[in-house]
Image 1: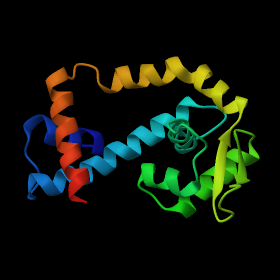
Image 2: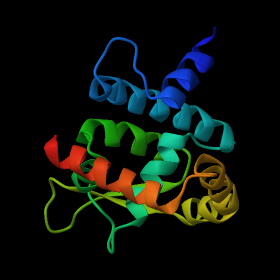
Image 3: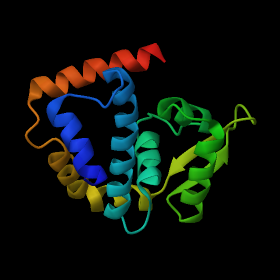
Length: 155
């Protein structure tokens, strides 16, 4: 039995191999995250899934965010964001500028090239989401959102 069929068998039968369901779910979330990232990396020619996610997070702000602000929304460190942003800047998707009011802050500006990548891959990301949530009932999605929300709050 290969790894894929082991996971399918566990999730189909709701029986975890000698461990509490909560422990299994925690690991399973990591597995799903890894698979999503690998699938996402195959979607884009120019950038990685993580870089696209960082661009998406930057776009959520009304004004160009700081590295710390993006780190907070991603629940990661400033240093991790700085590494990704540096690669995006090298590729021409963002520019970074020292904040005029607080010289300790670096603000991230998206370039036209970044907005173009959103437009280019809009349908592709929707297709990934459609496939990912195919045959998942709306009430299951809502329950998942509640559970993930509880988990987030408990961290």
